[in-house]
Image (cartoon, rainbow, N blue to C red; front, side):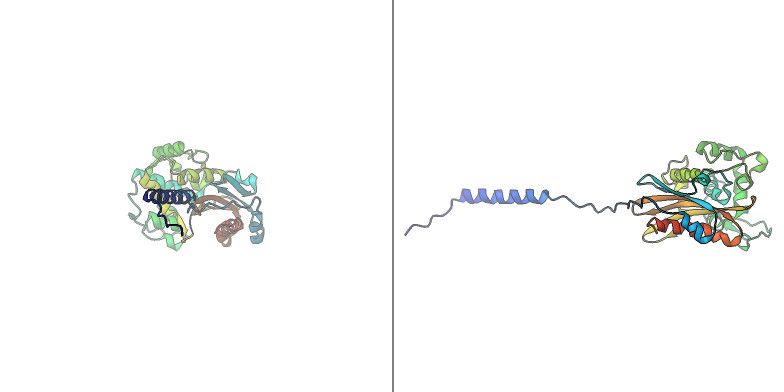
Length: 283
């Protein structure tokens, strides 16, 4: 019978080392899967005009997908037409007021002057966070007067907001309501992009605070920031809703502009925006 031969110890060690080496190599060769959620590629063509038809409203909407660098719109000619910004200017006015210190923070209160105005919610002492939410005109008129014509004009020129026109010193508290300041929906998008990307010439504190004040709706899946506006000095009245949706590692900027026939159309600005975002597979 043949004798049992033991494998030399050196061979056993060598084989063991090779097994371990190839095991490690095989493990390292498996690529790690990225945990980052990629933004979706939206539909190539979506009829954003359907929401306007459904609600019987005339107007336009412009949506910009930052990640895919793509615009979606209804009524392109109107998206290049300039209108008074009305209360959408409260975004810019808030930046300037906080930056200059005419209002030190979001909890500092201005005292109501006792004049009864059309909306009861305006007839009270208020801070900038409440005034932004309630679109309190007198509050922002006080801020503009405190900023002053020269400083306001300087910020307008530096940022390049709209048509850059704020009129005379006497118009300091109404130039965004009655002109001469005008802005197109496309320019609204450009301004909001620079705000969200923090490219505007304001301090980090000011940019962060204003964007926090702008939060219109927040859920675990998205944050919607925006501001409405209502131009009452024109016939028909003009309604705005501008802002941006942060979702799935992407940002979608929007500017909605409609003809407002009556107060019932106030909600249409927001509803059309929401329906349009849903049509794109968002919200």
